[in-house]
Image (tube, rainbow, N blue to C red):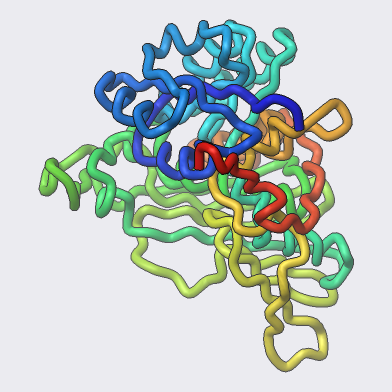
Length: 372
């Protein structure tokens, strides 16, 4: 595969551990630099990664050895760090969402195109065996023509476990921008792009109480809607309904179901890479669990960046900026529809990324025995 792809990581919060567990020591990736607003945290993380250096964000973005910046900052900082990376002539792979406003997301994609660099964006969970097996089943015609889908995410809210959950309830947060990327990305992989949306939203409480960490018991204000329901009209004519909520407690609904003329497909939680895919065909008397038939087996966060490093002119990155912008367009249009009370036509589209053939874990998790 050639020399390792040299990566600098900006933002070393909770989610960074999952990425570093995948990338640190991987034979195709070399983490050369890490940066965080907390310099002591940068030093601690760098000490765990052979060859990595702790440095300021500004120095990391300008560092000549960094080819791609992994942007794991809070959502409100995604655009600034991504644009700074692009202006430095480097690729960027950003944690979801691409940005908190559609205009910022579009600026990232347009500026990257002008600079000739790549944009990748989470979620990469859709590249695992769960969503990819479901896609292979649909593309193989096992449910006939797909007509509709439902996607449901219900939780009491992240303040129960996150020690600093403020940004989930500030502008740019909320269940749609936080969790919607997983579900909408999966729906795009399964059914293709979206052409219009209609949404409605509400909020249950004006305050939330932090349930863990040093701030336990502290109340934080809620500045966004915390329950959103919408209808997505796909370009192929299929209709998806989506619910994302921080106001419920639990649900028995499948995370995603896809209905076709000849069967229904139960798709596992798109917040995870794997999970059981189940099929109920016309004439069946019970659900059938399907063996994985596509996707990166045993994948974990960071596989999207590895996929980006392996991409070329014939096969663009699967977790790419165009899909991320279309997801952001879908989400922000749903929020705008809920405010304006009208159907919104989207201004973007995206090609369904290339499917992932069933790839054993040893074929992508190629760790360097010297460093792992």
